[in-house]
Length: 398
Image (cartoon, rainbow, N blue to C red; front, side):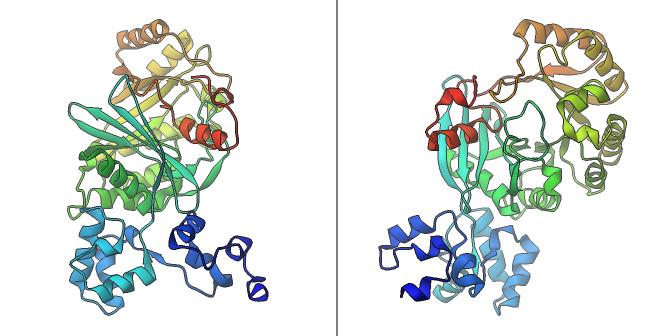
């Protein structure tokens, strides 16, 4: 027996092969077990939750089933939000077994769940099937529930003030992993999600194909059918993909992470500005507005002593005054690894008022979840540090 196992990966060799099913599930959690076993002799399962309405019908026909079975499965996955084939009770037992053998529904395990005592905000840390962690945030408003989701595990954009980019990019999220963040939050809260913000960990335009497919599927009339006009996606300014997105025929709101009133300020805070100069980024924003009719939102993280000066007011006025847009000021959240500080509330308000006098449509983003790990990446890093035996104070000084 030992000889037979000797060629297997260590995490397979060490399985308690005769243990209980509970032990087995615990050992295999965080692994795509099928694709790792026996040096690839067993085929990996297909992610059925990433198939759109047409694709899943074609897939059922490919395996010898009727197309309407695909429609039934799609409803189970994207309306009833089940995460196990055994729950699809209007399918035959033989079909459920076939699905179990050849397909997977990617799981998101709740690793941590924080509920704010100050406002109706909840933060979720989800563990993916391969052990990577992502964050989502539920924010409840009078007009409905909004969920902020991640598009990548980690991020490679390197924005200086952001905790999400510390540690770099682990991998892109599958379309299903973006969808299931919303599904999980809706199931846990017991309330419908009406608005989506793709401003969590990651750069959505760096995961372009999966991101665009997600937009089509979440707004599909056969799924949750969330209006595209209720979806906002943030980008740090990947110019070619911004132009491509403008041609997709979508109606989402595009939010540009501006953060600097000039090319020089942007380069100081955002490494991506070294590749895409501010004038080109602004041209892409104008193209998006021209093609979609949707005004662009400009996100501006206020950093004390860095981009909150009089020269920044003049620079922002020059950039925005002639554009049909909105400016969202975000006092930066302190992160231990970064030596940036947030301005006082008084200074932020003064900055806003001066911009308004110059004719800029501007607001200060209302802070949510300030008593929990509200900023992107903080909960994920705090959880990782806790597993390593570090204290909270070594992660962030919020």
